[in-house]
Amino acid sequence: MLTEVVVASIVLVAVLSVLSQLTVRNGRLQAQTREYHLALEELSNAIARLTALEPQALDRELQDLTCSPATAIALTSPELSADVIDDAHGRRLTLALTWDRSGKREPVTLTAWLPTKEPSYEEAQGGNRQP
Image (cartoon, rainbow, N blue to C red; front, side, top):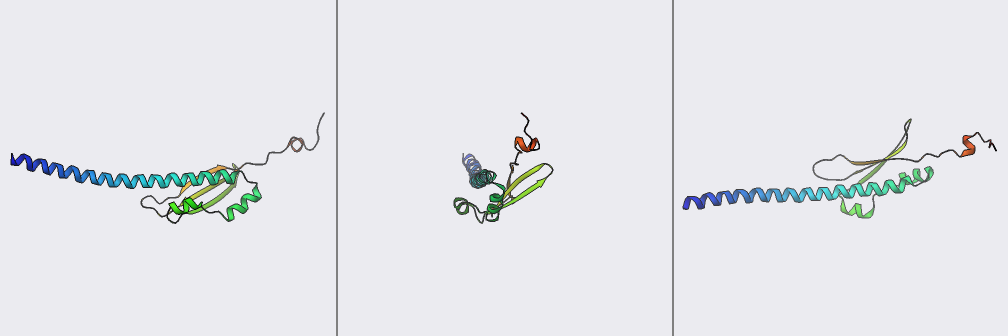
């Protein structure tokens, strides 16, 4: 009977140690997931706001681009950066958010196509309206 008690207590200690490690890892994973979702939300809000602007206003806003106060409090040392790419495929805006975190250190990025000014009917017809 003593042998059964010893074996049961060894198994119980092993299960509790594994369970405690999994609980700690789960807590860290949940915190990292919350931070990642907050970063995506910040980028999504910024993209929505910036893509609605006229090109001149967009250039001014990109000079003073900062994170929202809530994100600045929730994430450690967040840095928001923007890159406007204008090539044969069109004009697009890529935002990247980095912050001090454990594990994966690559920035979270989000890209959106910037609207192009469509020519009016008159401009497309060369300025001549046909009746």
